[in-house]
Amino acid sequence: MARLVAAFGSSHSIMLVSQREDWQHGFRQVDPKNPHYYDSEGNATTYEKLLAIAPPDAEAMVTPERMGERFDQAEAAMDTLRDRIHAARLDVLLVVGDDQTELFRTTNNPAFAIYYGETIRNAKREEGLSDGWYKKARMARQEPDADREYPVAAGMARWLIRELCDRDFDIAAMDGLERGQFEGHAFSFIHRRYLQGIDLPVVPVIVNTFDPPNQPTPRRCIQLGATLRELIAGYPEDLRVGVLASGGLSHFVVDEALDEGIIDAIRRKDTAYLAALDPKQLQAGSSEIRNWLIAVEAVKDLDLEWVSYTPGYRSPALTGTGLCFAAWRTLD
Image (cartoon, rainbow, N blue to C red; front, side, top):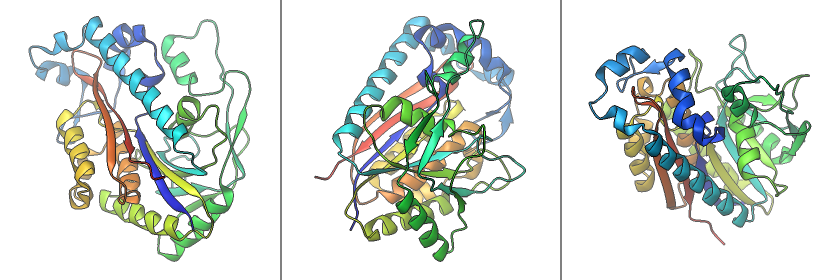
């Protein structure tokens, strides 16, 4: 039988594919244009309103020196997480990530999907000499030289789809990509940053966290995670299985209180706290916390061993991302 032996979590913010100077200067230019801001209570707001209520020391929190320190912290955390993933000696990795009108559109946008093709494609970067830093950062999640097909644990993925449907989960099933499509950023970031050099098959578990009106509730995410835990244990093949949550934590406004509460609940395995999160707090980028809820419940039998959290402030309005990286104790 399969064994769940390792688990991981990683933000996938564009900050993590940007350069030091982009942190220090670039985001001040782009963040005032972002239309997706919500306050700590989940109410829509604007950059100007956030700036007006920022604390007096906000400017001191986003000096080039402080931004450089945070950049270094995030880079070191990603290196640590990459090494932990490689050391786990996995046969398959379930990656729980969101789709933001990449493979799906609002014309047809399932709450949950699992990809079960033999491989999944990431695309070659399309860069021009005149491209700005923001586009270059987005392209860094893609391939430098040519399209690439990454291996998928297709048999396990197909089995999970059927078993989940038998347990009353409505799962969209994907056995391939249309012409011009390639895996979304939640998955391409994981492939490019963590899985280079190892031929590790994945099972992409795709969640509509971002686009209303059909995002799953935190409670439903917990239910899916619990069922995945049961199914992994029952999969009739001798495999070392890992699970990885891709995305989060709070953004595009950093909410340290929300992030710290979630990290503490994860450490204590407090399912009730996580299931009771207010969906109003999980909007825009913070919606990706749902991916963590699914993964955390799926790996509840493992103990959280390592966490790196960096409040990634990037403007005097305290916009940015709660950058979180985590690993659960790996079983031999």
